[in-house]
Image 1 (cartoon, rainbow, N blue to C red):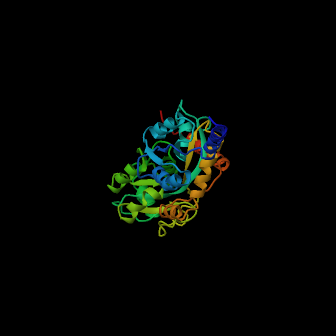
Image 2: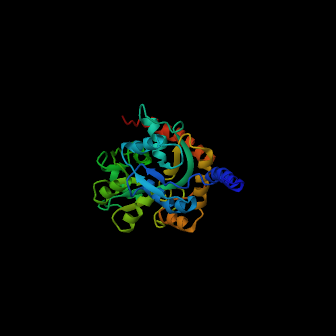
Image 3: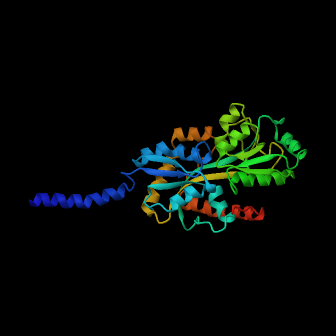
Length: 322
């Protein structure tokens, strides 16, 4: 080999690792594992970012829905994946903070086995009811429930989920016992509500807006500090006569523990950039969710606070899942 050829080979050898470091995720698809079936808040959040991340990261992003076991099937799959940035979890705050508080011998730990990547959406919850109930306001539903203690059902996407906690707190707030019916996700619960088999569901608007607009379920209130543009006619809980009743959740990307910092920072930068894109902002508004461009450290603080606060609520309500 000539001297010029050796120099070219040496240059290529030195440049290749530098390029790999500059584009640490290029070349192979990134799989985002979602712990719920299509149609719910987790799935909405993952698909909201899918195309933008594909463009920004230069590699295909695919969605893998793995519902079941209160999110644990999906979560364990990610904790066991290679920590190389090519397998991510679209985590739901109810699972992240709730499961450790109510499941004995949980095979994963939110602080030990997962590392934060970026916030996807923050979701105010709406209070929805079946179309066959003779109520149109929160006050009318409360009166209807008080006349039927223990007879009405409320849905959730699983024990310890934000919907479950919201139902427990709502039942306590109106002083009426209700029956909890857990589902494997928001979509099947909403279908049962549309069919008149579930009377109450406190969930993220993104999964319910289409049914509300189609007249298949009723929206009684938004359990947040402000109305949402997607359902502007629906009052807040304070406006509907229940001040202080706030139910919010978040959906965020996490990676297996041990994922290199450079990869986490590349992913976080892409997610934060995605939140500024007009199409994503429009779709988020239409879905009734908020965007929060948080750093890794900021998301870590949010998640740790949720583990403490939601865990306290679950233990106080003695919610357990064996």
